[in-house]
Every structure is written in C-alpha cells, then in structure tokens.
Image (cartoon, rainbow, N blue to C red; front, side, top):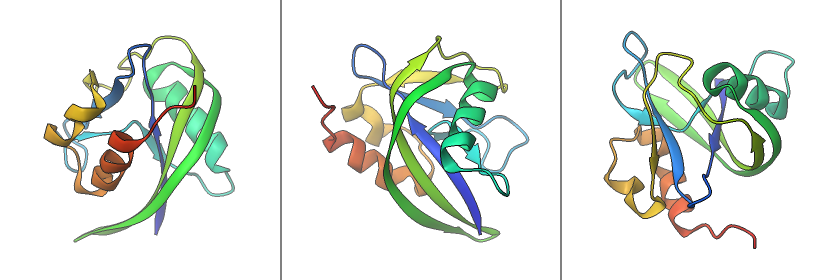
Length: 131
C-alpha cells in the first residue's frame, strides 16, 4: 500500500487550494488536494514539506495531521494522510504542470474531486480554524 500525504492549504480569505491532476497521470483532469507519495524511510512531515516545495514552491512552516483513510482503486490501494497547513511561506504556483484554484470550503463538494479525497472535503467543510 502506498502512503500519500495531502495538504489543506488556506488563503487569507479562508478558501482552500485544490490542484488538477495533469495529463498523463492516473485520473488526469480530476481535482485533488496537493501532496504526494511518502518515500521509503521518509517521515510524513518531511514528505509533505518536499512535495509542497516541488509542486507549489512553498515552504511548510507549521502543519497538523488531521485525519487518515484508506482508498481502494481497481489498480491500487493508497493510505491518505490529510494535513492542515497552519503556516507557510511563499505563494503557491503550479510547478508540476497542474492547474490550481482557490475554492470556498462550502463549494468543495461541487468540485470534481477524487473519490479518495471526498471524506476530507466533508471534514474541511465542518472544520473551524483555530482563532
């Protein structure tokens, strides 16, 4: 089973960032939360920081693990670990050929988000950021 870390990244207006899977990748054209595979021997925190730097050009300053789940596709099984970025440096940019968009949390359910990420959508719609 592949372990994947994904990030809920919020802007100042409270919108969350989603990324479109680029052409040529599994489930291309669908939307997901940014992140990627954890390498052998790598911690989830290190993988999250690496993936966000590679895909978006941002530096993860503080993040918190929120929930985990397993997703089964016909050709693969993945374990997903959702992290909320509490602080980051930089402005997210599409460095991996993907399209990005900021979405109001209440609008996430209307996006074409991967089935595996759907439980995260439900959790984020109800999530209250610490004040």
